[in-house]
Amino acid sequence: MEIKGLDYNTQRQKLLLPEYGREIQKMIDHAVSLPDREERLRCAKTIVKLMETKVPQIRDNANYQQTLWDHLYLMSGKQLDIDWPFDVNNAERIHAKPQPMPRPSNSIGLRHYGRLVEELWERLKTMPEGPERDELTRQTANQMKRDLILWGHGSIDDEKVADDLARFTDGKVQLNLNKFSFERFVPTDEMPQKRMKKKR
Image (cartoon, rainbow, N blue to C red):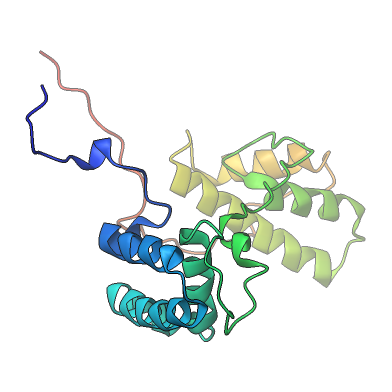
């Protein structure tokens, strides 16, 4: 339904940087249309001061003045012909998107343990027996139990950790549960709670 005299934002031209508002955009359009170069520059300086009041948090950036003039340049459609007080040649960098992060080439076999624990298993396979391997075994076993508790993944008893540790190190590391003692883990609010389904 169209009502004569009403002007909806949905019918207006889309703003490039909506945080500054449509009034600032109108001022910039007016500055572009001014015939005198010096007058355009004076108008641009006033607009930049108003832009700063519209987005005061921009002052937290060390080079916020550069950013404001870059924004002015872009909002003018690169048509504002003035002696720019800042270099605006790289203004379009604000639209640049970061490169996507590469996906891991190797898939994680057991997500509840994660890649780091898998790397620890591989390290333990090649380590000679001694205090260093014993310490890494202790840390790995405790991390495995911590992961099982956090993920709420099946059994979290000590035998499960010992069995997994032996299996994933190809039997190189055998945890003696009669001598080995795990760290005491205190449950936290962040741990997942198993939801009980209500019977109807």
